[in-house]
Length: 83
Length: 107
Image 1 (spheres, chains in turn green, orange):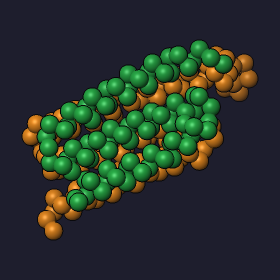
Image 2 (tube, rainbow over the protein chains, first blue to last red; image 1 turned 60 degrees about the vertical axis):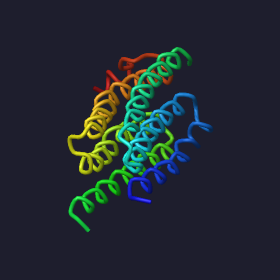
Image 3 (cartoon, one colour; image 1 turned 180 degrees about the horizontal axis):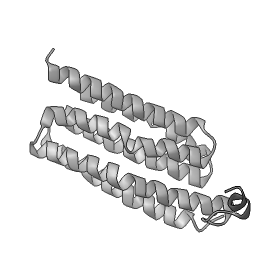
Image 4 (tube, chains in turn purple, orange; image 1 turned 135 degrees about the horizontal axis):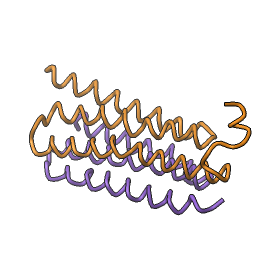
């Protein structure tokens, strides 16, 4: 087990913290926590790709980064209508 | 231990620590705007440090260039998402995006 795999595992465990906010807080607070979770998941995938020494795995965090950004914008666009 | 290994370890530890502080800040602070500060930091500091750790290993290989692309997407597009979220939060909490009457009076 190398340093990247350990970092990826620690980052994955860290998702519990924003996960609590997603479950318990208001929807807009949950979206903020969801965005941070998405970024952290992208970093987990980046660490795992490097940790497994497979260059083809590096496409996964790229797709994740783009879809997290687009998804975040869509959520924010619709949640902004509710008060 | 080689210098590159040491550099990778330092970047990884700093990057993971930054992400931990950001996740903890999002959990601890109660206000959505305070939480946005931490979420915004989570899209810049952590990805840059972890991306730097990957780049130390991969340099300019195909994987290294893809890692640079991932970092660019997260770091450049992240603040736009933070601004959009802040505008939505402002509209939800105060009903308007611009300054309110009392905020205008206080300058």
